[in-house]
Amino acid sequence: MTQTLTIRKANIIDTKDILDLISEFYEEGLKECGLNFTDYSLYKTAENFINNGIVIVVYDNDILIGLIGGMVIPSMFDEKEKIAQEAMWFIKKEYRNKELALDLLNRFEEEAKRFNAKHIIMVSLGNMKNEILDRFYKHNGYKLLENQYIKKVV
Image 1 (cartoon, rainbow, N blue to C red):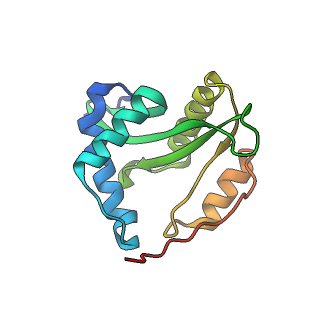
Image 2: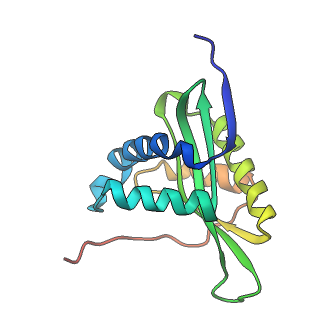
């Protein structure tokens, strides 16, 4: 089958595909952190992001292979400025390459500008190859902001 990639804004019809892909993301990177996962919570989050935030999806024919999503929120330092906060960015292993990641990032940035975001904050999971991601972000104009840690307390 010929590979036909389509990158576009997500709509509510994509929610089932998004849930399936985020389930894969959870198994690959979040489960080991002890974070709980429920389909309902994920569905409501995806619905909220699609309706009120930014979700860009990439399909290979009719199969969802990647996405990037987040919300645009007021800055806690200056309520007049908006920040786009990425919350999910995942590409199926067999499709991972810098070009596709860059395409998704560029589309996310375009949408953030449409929301009048002044800054974009990107995150990475602790199990990522941070030296590669660090070079990728810096090459695309990003600066290191902070590292985050998680601890289960209950």
